[in-house]
Length: 483
Image (cartoon, rainbow, N blue to C red; front, top):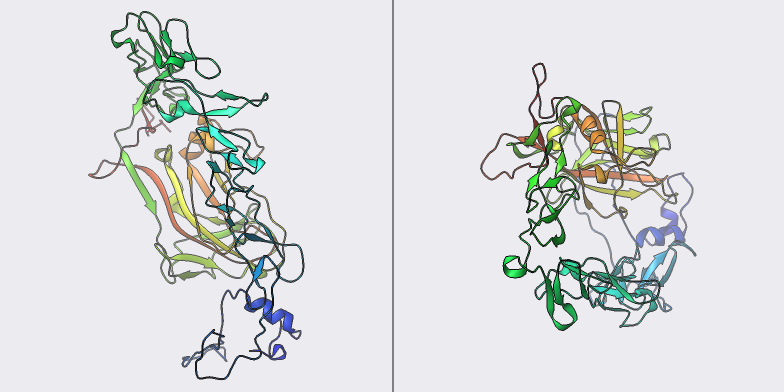
């Protein structure tokens, strides 16, 4: 293998020593020809071996053709083919690119050799470059000192939750608390709001006089967290009512602390306004791949002018088999998406509030430009919505999930999606597309572990689906949302 002349490039030209060493620096796969005619009856393979260089005596001749370079700082490996600890790969420079120091602002000693994402941020920092302070701390993490991030000096009751200790560095360089405990106000939550008494700087929390225990009896799911008045009336979220903010307003359902307005509005396709959380449970639609069985998945471009329904492979994977496609070079240049089969189509109103989970991987085909595009697209009832996910690094399987809630989706023109948009699309879902290519040059792509939450009859062990509405439909209509 040391002779570059024994190898050729895919276009038929001779390979050079540089070509061969760059390929050997990060081998993706070996392929040995198995068929030599159009209809072979059988093929066999035996005695496969590969010579490698090792740092100890083996009884075999020395590897004199393998170079051992004196690498400059930032590089390591026999041919300086790897970035050393504390460095990451840049596309600039000769051959494999340049190894540059990790940009971690002094808060981490290592970063991912390909993506540059810092690993093990210290000093209460976080973020891809350790450039942000963790919740509960404030400051400028990019200054590069161990004291960049300091604890938030927010006052509150003893044992108060960490959410009330979140702050930020204001324009004057001083900390400002983001969320004070009920009854507390001021820049550092150091004073009591009207209707409360106490002295937070001296450890005396703000309380309501005349209310038993000095504490408001507010339901945390439906109250704003701003306490109550002198009569004990709690301050409720927009869609909640009652003295303790424990009841959804008329035409609303699902009281939850995770809801900004406290309760969800009944949609019911605009036909009625009376609904409640369904008694159904969370089930899951899955399509496990098997050799020779792509489960009806296809590859398409956004315009549907190209559709690939065959030529897929299924490879073993942990924990799920991986559906792969390796012939992108034969397709017109474009962004391609995995098109999910019929089990993920039709009436999917019961998926509202649930998740779509999947794992992706892809391998670039060589030099190519990134393709910015939506990562997921759903279409139904002439409504198209898209969603964006974190970046997928090449050659690294990455698990993703998207929640079927309007705040995670948007229209193709960039405008936010509404609850009505999402439920209308889910009522008659025509298509789900999941992005497969991320560059103008793609060698292969894979998808695994596709699963979509829906609503099914209750069974032991299945969680409830409280975000799914069940409407009181008038005669002539049926379905969870009278769809």
